[in-house]
Length: 471
Image (tube, rainbow, N blue to C red):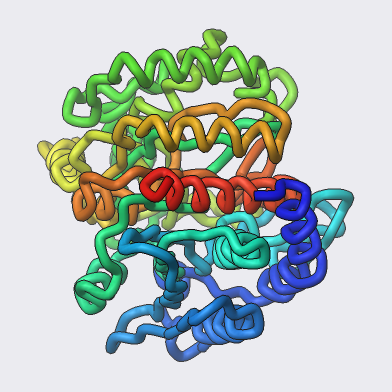
């Protein structure tokens, strides 16, 4: 394969077609079903699916078929099948649904208004990960333009990932044998430690989440009258959270939420820390004087990839500060997000979380915890020698530096499903979410040069996948 020709094809495709398509895509607030229960009536997910569908048809590859798979009451899925040489199969994955807006975007930026500043395309969803279909088809197009052989490639672009992919198992079951038995899975929904080399995700954390509700009154009452008599629901919620987490250190207390860290992952964490240095924590927008939870860089990598962590991501029952009267509120509701180690059983963790929070409620308060998300993590199988060589060569050819390996703290529910369904498959999980890209938060952006280089790497790996069994 001619690497100069590969890069030229990919650069032109991105500039002429991919970036404009992603710019239009950002403008559509097609939030995931968990954040838009009326998604069917609003039609925004269907609108994006149709746009992606039409783009794929305009850039059709040899004998390619494109189909929108729809099941009653389920989000649609875009199924793209690109025939290839031989009997092997590559499965490619991405998603097109988005997280909600969130406040705090910088002046001149907006979640639904695309803005290009330098090498960055700002807006919700392009990097997480609307670019995936465009990058995958561009990689295959570059191969076919040079007459480079590849195996059959099946691409799945779902619309429910940000809600935990609860529709995906039903669609996969419906498709049955049409997907085949892939020996390589490529998912473009992950992150990168920097924008200087190819980063391969070796593990993903799981997630257990839900709503903790504490009620002490049927209505709010004067805090001067009730304070000291009626217990504050927020204090009770705080006591319950202390059952889960040591608030001084952030350490999760129960062994049910921990898993042993393999030696190989410890070594990868140390190597990643050496590459990234202080950027592991300096990439975050700390306020003046705030510091990370540890000064040990390897420990920080392990904290975000293999250890559980609790975040309070939402609240009800708390009026805005500017409109808060002297009232002892009747209840407090907190939305919890508990990140879990890759090998921890998320369903069991959610059950344990509920039991720990609801047992023996302080002051006899009404306490309930309703789990609304339990998603297993994933730990990659050992790399086959051919794939390790391919990743190294691809990274050096496209980035000029060797490939790097690290776990990620987020969750891709589909990876756990695929790991169980295709235990013999090799995995390339990677992405463009690097320093300051801030997926799910304000000022999310896609680093365009990384998108182009990653596309070239995917093309190289797909070509090497075919050659490894046909040389």
